[in-house]
Length: 151
Image 1 (cartoon, rainbow, N blue to C red):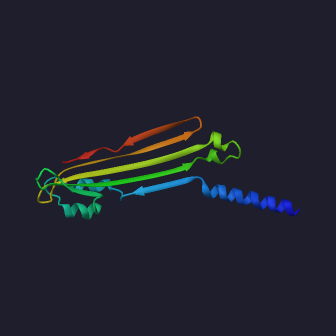
Image 2 (cartoon, rainbow, N blue to C red):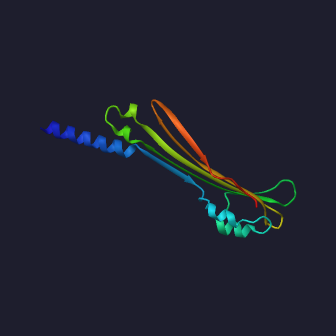
Image 3 (cartoon, rainbow, N blue to C red):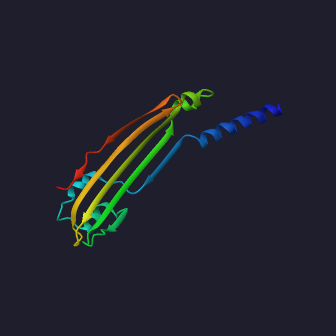
């Protein structure tokens, strides 16, 4: 009887460990770009300080090497979530019939400021990619956001 209770304990511990160590992954970088704020950007009017008030500090800011005094600011956000699908949890056959599903979202806002630090030009791009994979193959689908440029 002592052997049986040890066996059950080991099996339960293994199952708990299996559920704990497998299944999900998430990563994120940058701050999400709120697309409704893009309509507030006006070429020749919006200042760098107004941009930073709307979107926070840019991911990068460089001085253009052409000597014009222009600057280019970039805001970038990416978010990825992945998890094993439900079939993966089926005992014995799960590793062969299961698989993983993932969603990745990317957003980029690039702004060029003139020497007076007023928006000269900007472009926004972004999109979402979803995919799944299993022992039998994989499938991906990408949906692009509507690009937004100067107006």
